[in-house]
Structure formats: structure tokens, C-alpha cells
Length: 437
Image 1 (tube, one colour):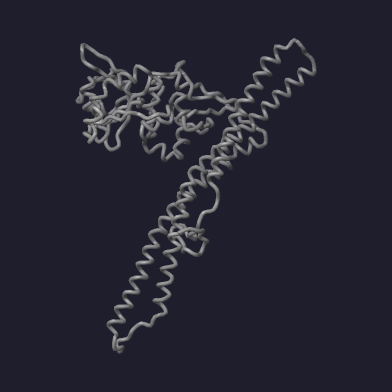
Image 2: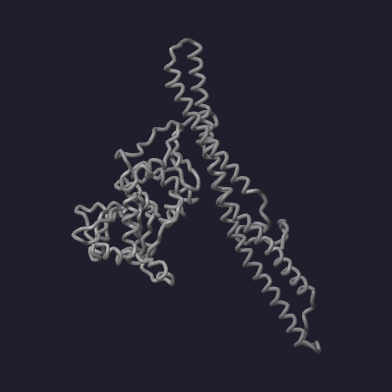
């Protein structure tokens, strides 16, 4: 089955009222163009910064003065300003195009596949319907009335079954079209942002640089989760801040135009200050949150919970070890995949500055459903007993103090989100542990 489906040949989707058809366009080309534009935007920012450095330092140190030098200095500053304006346009537009192209590529493939199926099923339905309508209904006077009535009933059933088969795939086409259109609308909205129009006129927004690291270095206490469901991200960031704060610093580049670029392993993402969540956390946390929301494609996806291992992969590029308390077919071969087998790996990861995240779900420590992700910040021995220290990204353990104590945990007083447990109690209390390799 191949070819292109023209509108009007495969029926009309009930939900949107759209004629079912193939989607034309080249989302891969859009994605590549967007990626290139984002790259040009970053390059322009870097060149602009170099020009400003030349103007403010190297030219300033020349012993030669006069109108020519002043004009040169002014020209360099003007060039830097033009590059800043261009990069402020290229970066968000390129980013929007790249996301749109990436997201819609799969939608287009699925829409076209469904359109072909709908076209075939619609033609079958129309053919059966036409045959049914052209046939004459039997009358009781016909000598073979019963036979003809059975045949007509069978034909009627075939028409309805053909319609139901078409309707099922037409609904799938409709729903996929709605998802595609949401991506389209998001891209159009971002490209028509009034701030971009001001930049097109040469008006760079006034931007006050963020105080990225209020404590001098990234610190776990900078993480203080609010109402957004991104504990899967924040628990990893707190772990990196604890073990390897320079890794956090290397993740973020402050650009000359007031934007911030986060260097994920699968691609850089640049965000404006107005794209950052206003959740009271340290600015470095907010920058990474804003970029990861773009990484996930929408606030809904970002806020809907996630896997700390996916965050680790986005930041480090490698996989994470997953440990749980469920017996597996291959445990005997791998030496065990249980939490209580992971003490050495946890200690090794923490000693090398790699994050370790513990997950409590399905009622563990009072966290129901998908649960909550917490950071393992320390592994140590106390009087011959293996111990671990854990931090809740809430910055407190409000509402779960009793469950933590019942599981063998000792909370800080006053409660700052930290608590300690023996490793044996830890292995029983948590549902899973994810360790960056």
C-alpha cells in the first residue's frame, strides 16, 4: 500500500472535521534547518563576545589614539551589537524549528499511514453501501423472501462493519492530527512572540544577568522543589551539586544577549530568562529546569514525572545502573540486581562525584503511586554499620516524618530534608536505586 491520499477520498474525521489526507512537508528538513540556525545563533554569540573583548581590552591597550581608533572601536561595538541582535533571533527561532521538525516527523509518518488505511477502508465502505442501496428490498410475496432477506441483512452488516473499521482508524488519524496541530501551534506561537518583533527592529531587551550560584558553588540546598512534579530532575541535580559542582558550572553558558545555554549530551538548549520557572530555587537550578522543559517538549511532559536515569543520560550521555528489590530471571547470572547488592556501587559512585537517586513508590515511606525521587548524598560506616544519608528535594520531609522513622530513618532537627538510615534499612525502605555509571 503506497501513494498519497488527497482530501475527499478517505472520509472526514469526526472530531476536527478535517478531510482525511496525507500530510505534505519535509519535517526532517525543518529540523535540520532549525538545528543549523541554533548553531549559527550560538556562533554569533561567541563571535560577539570576542569582539566586545577586543573592544574593551585589546584596542583599549593600544597606545595609538585618535579619531581612527575611536571609529574602529565604535565599529567593533556596532558589529558586536548586530551579532547580538541576530543571535537573539536565530537561537529561539532555530530552536522552535528544530523541536517542531523533530516532533512532527513521527506524526507525519503515522498520519500518512493512517490516511492510506482510511482511504482503502472508505472505498470499501462506499462500494458496499452503493451496492446495498442499489439492491431492491425483498417483499413477503417473493417466493424466496427468506433467502433474499438474509442476503440483504448480511449486506447491511457488511456495510456497518466496513464503516466501523474505517471509523476506528479515522479516529486514530483525528487524534494524531490534533497532536500534530498542537506542535504546529506551539511553533507558530513561539515564532510570533512579540519580543522577537522588537528584536527584529534592533531593540535588544534589557537583561539583568542572573546570580547563578548564590552560594559561590552549586549546593544541594539550592534545590527546593515546589509544586512542579520534577523530583526526577531535581534529585539528580542535587546529587551532582553535592559530588561534582564543577559539572553543574560546565553545563551552563551565560550568553552576551542575556540567554543561557545548557549543554545536554544530545544537544544544546538555549533559554531566555522569561522561560525559566519562577519557583524560588537558585538560578542555576531554574536555568536547567527551563532547558529541560524544552528538552521534554512541553510543560505537561516535564511536569508529569520522569525517570532520573533519563536525566543522567541527558547530562552524562551514558546509562545508569538500576537496582530494585524484585527477583529477576538473570539475577543469578549477573550477581544480583537488588538494592542490597548495590552498596559498593553506591559508595564508588559517590566517591567519584556521580549522582545516586533513590525512588520511593507504591506506598514506600508514604509515597503513593509513581512516588518520589530523593538524592543519596553520602555513604559511610558508623561503628561498623554501613550507613547512607538521603536528601529530599523538597528541602523537608513534611508529612512523611513518621513513615521515615518507622523505616529506621533518623531525621535532622530542625527538618531540612536530610535523614540517615542504615544501609540494610535503606535497601528495604526504597523501591529502586538508580546509579550513574
